[in-house]
Image (cartoon, rainbow, N blue to C red; front, side, top):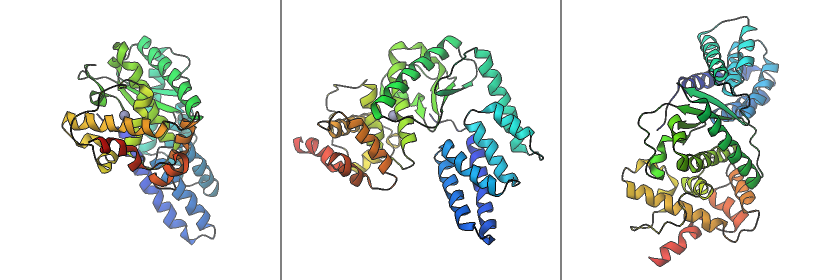
Length: 333
Ligand SMILES: [Zn+2]
């Protein structure tokens, strides 16, 4: 389930308007450098890599300190990073007002209130948004599990995300907490790690689910490139370990194309199950015999995807191509 929040829309609006600034500046001598920063800023914002966006925006604001459009972006980026107090005081120190500003101030105040009401002092590497009431003990438990997962993943990949990870615990009556992976669509990582608050009532489920979704968050922070689904879902399953040892599903071996595109476009459960199973096997095959630093190598693959094709990146670090990872299964058929 994906919930589109108002802010994502706001983000798009802001990004669209920044292109106007770029055009306007083409008169200037330093336009080239400036435009390069605008492009980088847009790319980072689109990927929701807020630290990177902020760095580039800092530069742009030094060039054009009075540009109200840039100032609006700046407030938005403070907000997106959960720096609500900073966001409010930044807006209050501006000489102009806008509807976007009003929205950010109101929403910041609400989130500060929500956070204070929880009475939790330390949010570690995370930032929390609640959508309705959540039990403070369950929130604390979720944060503890996430913090443990964060440490494990940082160690494994030797990677320390520069962005705070936003967690949204939302209210849902639909989530029953039964079944296995494809039913996890109640939990999702879409730039924010979202899960239903009542997940925390299912002890046997929430640990693998939070490890799984946090793996997606790490992968997202490692690269701005589009990651093939088999690789993203495969590594998340290897980490969460909840589906280990399942027998090979019946039915045809999926094509590489099916394994690359979104799995959720398939409505029948058997097909989706099969795609998840083969994804995990492909990543297990990739990591097998790849040495103690195999997860670091995998991190390097994610980083390289920004400049290289999937096969190029895999060859560089694992001496294997995507087709090689499926070959064993095709042979046996
Ligand atoms: Zn997943």
